[in-house]
Length: 252
Image (cartoon, rainbow, N blue to C red; front, side, top):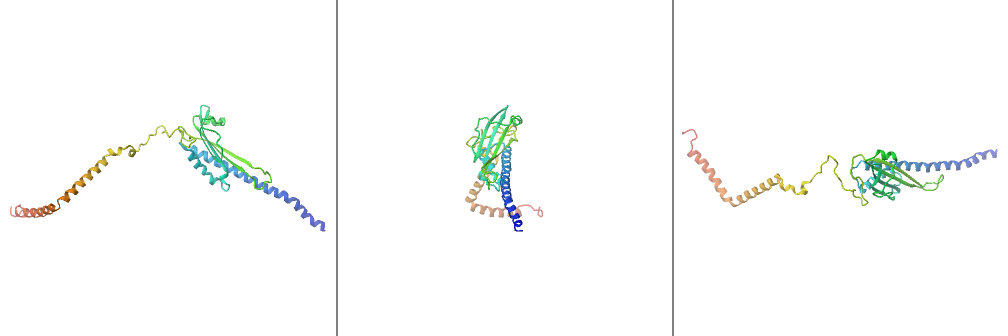
């Protein structure tokens, strides 16, 4: 009877290591899959945001990189590596027009060729391709299934939405060749900077009215006493001349 009571304890001791290994291993794998999925979302978001612009700088790109903070939560965003490359596709040739990175080395420099999938080259001919990559060095929490650091990486490609000219940025972050107006757009000139407001008619009227106000003010100051005399004489002469010398209808 005593031997039978120990069977359950022995079975429990045999199965617990397997259960713990399965549980802890599943936790590590689940964490890794969640990070990998979030990396794909970050890469897709960054490439999509850049592809919607008609001009871009590396400072703007780094601002877009920061949008990945909310996506990567609850994982540490500071350990996330990001890289963005802009490629011009023209007649089967690819040329890098901008490249920047965060916590990562830059893979290509301006003017170099960049290998793209053949179907993407055909689709983006005459346009620009935005390539965003996101990476994360994942270290398992328990190391029961794998105890080494895994380098997770995702990549997303988007073509530019608009017909842009010289899309990209130089190594110092400035646009490749400055903004150029697209076809059908006119450059807006600020008249305040060109000095053309001096010819504005309204400005001339303001100056003229200012001069009139000054003249009337000076005249009033110099003839205060005369105005009082003229005023009394005007009332007296007007009423007296009207009643005494004029014809009002009764004595005519």
